[in-house]
Length: 200
Image 1 (spheres, rainbow, N blue to C red):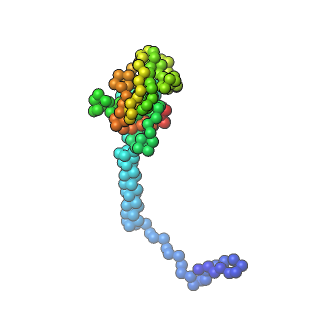
Image 2: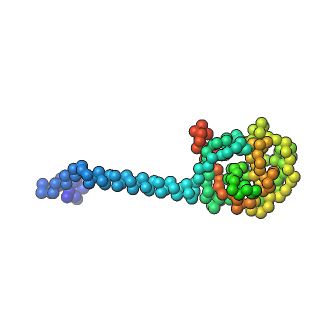
Image 3: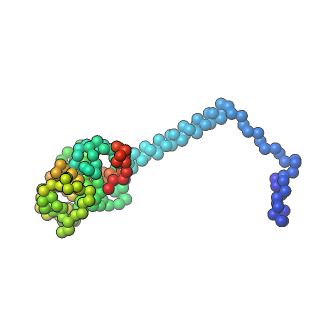
């Protein structure tokens, strides 16, 4: 091995040092090792993907136009099924829930009021706790003139509306949604490619 002197210079190794081992020739053993490594990596990748899909994210297909223009009919999105175990549901979240009148169906709507909020709708204009709700996601063409009497959202419930107000069946029809029915937050659109990105 090299010898380190006090002046920190390094002398080359002595001639009696063992020569470096020769490279192993390619052969069946090396190929088998490469295939084994590739299969292992693929299985790990599949396991991680399955974990994310089963426990964290789930792809869903939107059916209907009640969330236009945020979400179009047949659009594909990922929902996060774990996020509400870590953080509360908030106003503005786009949530997926079991339809209260038929739990075999799932709906996707936007939360506009949370438990304890006072919510009312006057000629299509939403007020929460006495203040008009800012809704930049709602184009004028999708507004309607329906009203809803002021109500206090019950504990553990959420008032949800579709962004396409004049085509949406939502809390104006079936009331606030119990949090036990909500099982995910829509977080990312992945198809069509033109709408790829985070949902707002």
